[in-house]
Image (cartoon, rainbow, N blue to C red; front, side, top):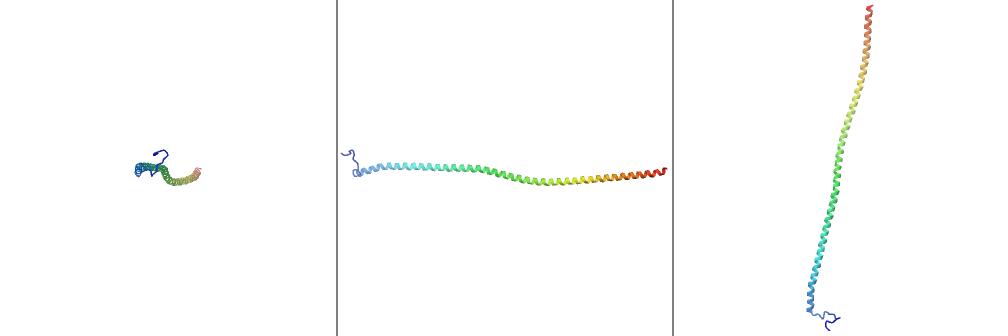
Length: 153
């Protein structure tokens, strides 16, 4: 019986017109499926490309932030080193000035000590002269008194 159960339809039993119609009906469906598939792939590629760009941008921002953070530390160290160098130069100049001033003070103290020694020498000289003058004065007084006494006798 035609169209009965268990019977398979073969290509011979389908007319060429029916096969063409079947193909023509399937063609839009396959075309639509292909377009949908291509659209989904295109969306996936765009999404993947967007994510890749976002990841690159995030990595770039992170790298820049790290470099900036390190640069701040390096810049601060450089500024501190320059300040230290300037302080060292200033300290060297001040130390040299202090050494010259100290040398000058030492020279003044030595001159003062020499002057004190000379004053001591002058003082001793003055005492010696004073003693000599007293001796002379005593001798003159003795002589003067001796000359007066013989005339009175």
